[in-house]
Image 1 (cartoon, helix red, strand yellow):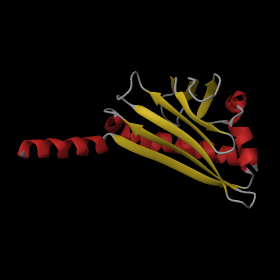
Image 2 (spheres, helix red, strand yellow):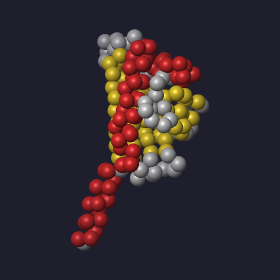
Image 3 (cartoon, one colour):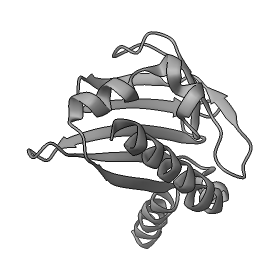
Image 4 (cartoon, helix red, strand yellow):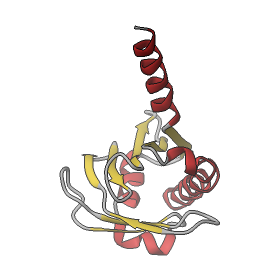
Length: 160
């Protein structure tokens, strides 16, 4: 019984160590409809988005798209996430994997919160899980977080 308890404890501890969430939010003086129209105009991303350089494919729940990110001061990467949520003027969420599920997975979410006064709180977040997450912790805390913040600021500029 002692060994089983120890095993369960270390399994829980290890699972927690293999997860990480990054989040950045910004208040935008524009309606969710205006912010959403900019956010989902993927063809225009190369012209303004400093973090997500391209999204190619039909963004529809269940579909896979091709996304290219270029975090500040880090190597860019292209991946093929699956769309989990696409709720007009509210939320877009996808799940991507590095090579295969369980190694380094990222559930990326854009959330638009209608503040009821003509403003929108825009939240960009990503939950990372997998055995490689601890190896990338520093890059996630620095480069990815900065990328979120830079994108959010540019989105705010365009919407306002």
